[in-house]
Image 1 (cartoon, rainbow, N blue to C red):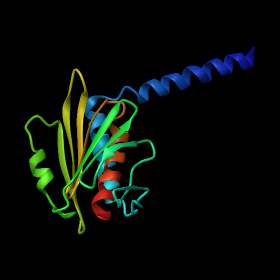
Image 2 (image 1 turned 90 degrees about the vertical axis):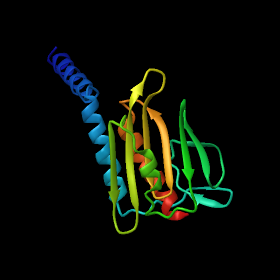
Image 3 (image 1 turned 30 degrees about the vertical axis):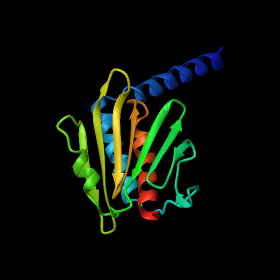
Image 4 (image 1 turned 45 degrees about the horizontal axis):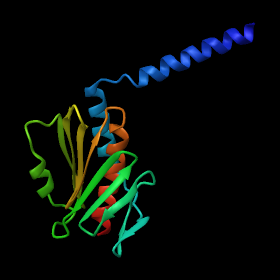
Length: 171
């Protein structure tokens, strides 16, 4: 009986903690996504290519599948979620062109990151009824856009920054 009581208490506490983690406010999720994107941008780890498109080496997170593409445009999927990569070969990794074109008064967040080698940013637009939040992350001449949920936004921001950074620095 004591064992059943302890198990019940542990189970209840587990679900309370788990549900508390999923109840972050929009503001908290957006700030956490910003933080993950910034830390990933600043991380010194080189994103080693693990795929190739038309002879161009690229890094793609394992959870994403390549649907189509060439050296300038790439469409990735994770289940029903689509990620679109645009790479402008003319722009270098310090380019601010994509960041400047991402400027909008609608953005919940738009923040730039810069170091000696590269320029990057994250932009989040408010959710719409059909597709969720629009998340865009860029490094130099590479930008990645997807529609995401509040629950998925933090992981997407991190993976998208890794991908953009790897693409920009390897091409």
